[in-house]
Amino acid sequence: MTFTPAVVGNISTGNSTTTPLAAAGVFTGTWVDVTRYNSVVVGGSSDAPAATVELQFSTDGTNLDVNNATPISTTSFGVNAIVSAKFFRVVYTNGTGAQSTFRLQTSLKLGSTASSSSTSIISGGGSSILDPTLDAFGRLRVAEPTTLFDAKFQYNKQPEEWDEITSGTGGIAYTLEYPYISLSVNAGTGKAVRQTRRYHTYQPGKSFDILITGTLEVSGGITNVVARIGLFDDASDKTDATVSDHLQTNGYYFQLNGTTFGVVQRSYITGSLVTTTVNQSSFNIDRLDGTGPSGVTIDPSKRQIYFISLEWLGVGQVAMGIYIGSQQIPCHVFRHANLDSTLPYTNRGSLPVRYDISANSSGSTASMRQICCTVTSNGGFNPRGIILSESLFNDVVDLNSRSTLYPILAIRIDKTRAARLTINVLEASLVCTTSGNIFYRVYRVLAPTNPFTTASWNNANSTYSGAQIAVNNTFRTALRWASPPADANAVTIGQGYFANNTDQALLKLENRVICVADIIGNSDIIVIAALTLSGVVESVAASITWQEYS
Image (cartoon, rainbow, N blue to C red; front, top):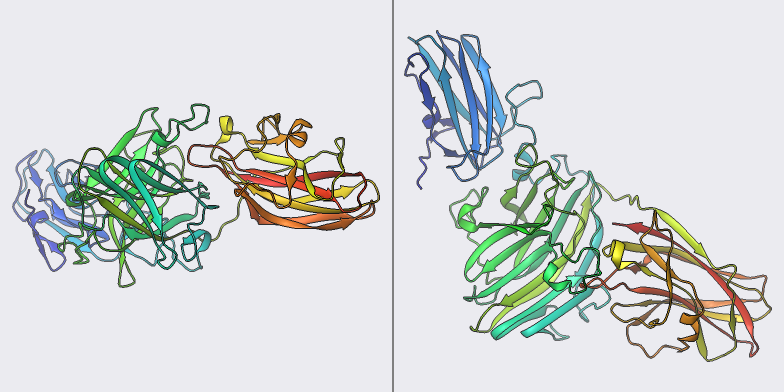
């Protein structure tokens, strides 16, 4: 469909007229692309003042998405609105009296002229998405972003931060001298996925900004191959039906389906998966085909800096785009406020960074590149998660070996209630109730490894917490670790010494010890273990304090 530009200077000629209307006559303007503008102003005069002015916006120039009607009762009038979709037109409906004089003029403004006192303002406007100096909430970016997570692959694949899945012909490769990871599928059905273990914590009221670098598909797209980069998860990977969110798929990503580039929103908020795919030709800000405000044509076979900016709050907008030459170029905005539903638009704002590529039938080999990413909170980050503590003061552990570490206390996430919880261990404390010298070590055992297959786990607090504590002696007798343990997935995150019953080891672990889950939903396990240095039996007790984020 062709849209008449209808813009001379900043006057939209297709939405301006001086032709008088008959009684009940209607002037319908021409849909015009207002991507590069922040606001519209419609003014005029008529000798038959009873009328209605409608400022209409559409994402595709066909279907009406936002309509703001203002009654006119004076001979002169003026109304305005912030741009809230790609296309705009004005509709003027005359009253019961025929006009003899009439003037209607529409101006398109680069700066916002709408004010809170105007009855024609469209709330939740889109001006900030065109202005990189503003965050997702339209606030001036005056502070450094707070980094919640970042990743680069200089020396390894960061297995403590990333989980991965392959099936069929899918493969994942990393070579030390190249700081990227290759995800590929060969001829035939297959999949390769890399996803952060953390569901990065979104804090309401803060702009949640994600930068992701990579190459969607190195040859520019292969038939029957889909490559995706973004902030999202996928229920098809959650194969354990006991995991609390095993049915949920949520998030946003850039997609190359064959050779078709697009952006996607996925949500399970209605109880079934709803996938909203917007292909490049339908982007509502910049189609990235050389015809948009930036003049940029994207090449998905080349490395790109992709960005996603969330104003979540369950109803906010999500802007997506790229960076070229240090310039932020939004391509599409998913808008939700004041629109089609009473529900949040996704189940959660806290989501993982994910790269995946899949083939659904035989075809040529395809490959994507994972390079780097960062997740930031603009305007700071002040986590509000609940703080809890557990002490086993009535359950002292006897240590009788100088070479074997005895588990004292262990904590994990209850996957049946809160699989995507993040546990941030704040501190751990140990005390020897006898007179010996003790060596201790704190481990993070990465899921899906579980050294405590016979342990019993109790909820730390079934009302307020999603954590579980291993409480019976079974898990201690079932595990006597050598030092260090043979299990490669047991990462040492703290260790030291303390002496006799007058001393105490207090480990400040905040932001160093994170307990999360793998893609399926299996929890990591944090373990405090100790051994005696005296050669005789010594008794040790422990406590742990942590904060939970969701």
